[in-house]
Image (cartoon, rainbow, N blue to C red):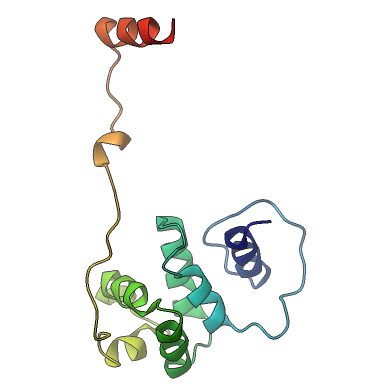
Length: 142
């Protein structure tokens, strides 16, 4: 099982159903793994950038008893602090509850910059089918 799937299942086992991975049987959370480590694992620099994961992380930050200092320390150690800061800065002020205000008070990391990701809004817009587009697609497949 890929690490990303296991991390999502671990979050689901703890009751944070923000992003659903593969359906899994109910189980107890892994002992010795705290929520701060789980958040850092979801924000790892090599992990896939997915809005559903961001929603899950924000939900965890709003609801879980997070130690802000420990989260920043672990995020810095694993080089996930830039992604954490970027995500925190995207949360609207009306939704900054739980650990989010105390995390923002710590200030931006030294190397903070906007997170780079690809997003194509045109991909989400449905375009009506045209005879030319259908003919070109049929011609390519034959």
